[in-house]
Image (tube, rainbow over all chains, first blue to last red; front, side, top):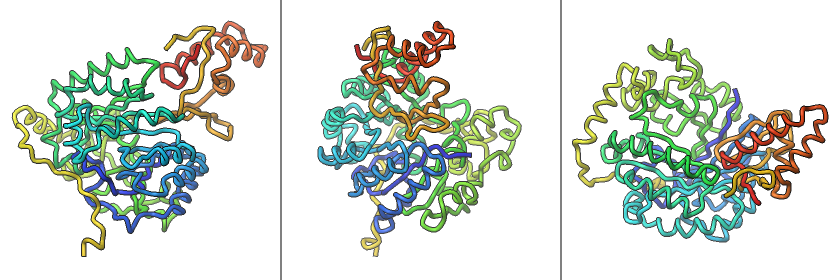
Length: 364
Length: 94
């Protein structure tokens, strides 16, 4: 089995405070971040394992002053290098340095098509800067993706968001519904769309894809809660993705830290190959031996691998349960109850904003 | 943005490139993915440089594969490039 992607969370520091951030609630502080050299060795090891794509993400990856060196190290290891960024801190000079180092793809996240709402979600003023930055990115030969995170509060403006991506001349538009882990789970009742909203969004995407074929590729990720069957989370546990956190811990997915009893080996102590092939965390839910019924005898088990282990943990308290978003899951009632409440509960306006990792110095 | 015709000059989009060095399994790396190139795939992609027209590519492929059925080469190159265009892997310059 060969991993295809390495997600490198090179820092958890971020100037934004998005209410649906996918970082864990317990973040790694700056003092523990891996050095440039250790990241470079890790990328080399990933290339040797067969990894094709390197995703540099965070936090905000631009918070690392050595980002261009990391891009160059990724290219040297034979990887396709993608940067996932809010754009904050991306000066013309840094953009030049990054593309000069061989950056293949920039994914710029937007919180909305409307400035006020975007700034509300991000907990900071970033929207206008992103628009200006998009124009600058188009002056470079690099693939440009606009990433829109959608939810109950902005889904009504989906057509506007598509128009904005067109205007910014994105090569690719990624529209991703919020998924409910970490910070987003804390804000779930305010963010989960209604079924009517969800169905309308599907129709809009289908029409836009047709219209924009050959001009702008549109990738779309629906909310798990409205799916009939679960997603193949991370392409299956330990099947195609390795995530490395700022301190060097290797995880099978973003939220794996929420599963009790798992220990994550560190690239500073173990080889990436050993971690991938033999470490207990990566073997834990690989294959089918761990599966309960109805997954074990289900025809879809080779397509969705039983869904998401972290979601099973968060919603049922049991990481080995069938993902409750599956309509065949014994505990699908949990998801139905949440959806049932969406229409009847207005949001009280209290958001939980993602905080920045607190440094050990400040803590004492 | 034009449709594919004999005079189109396909060009790889930014962020789409062949994996180097060329190996047993050739890969075309694209945003969020990779396409495995089989058969003449690599030879076609190498000619997507904004200089070759579709007609040029077909003619050169016919010369590379003299024993293959010429009409089949034409159809295959067309289908392949049409697919890459839909995926936004190539732009068509006129």
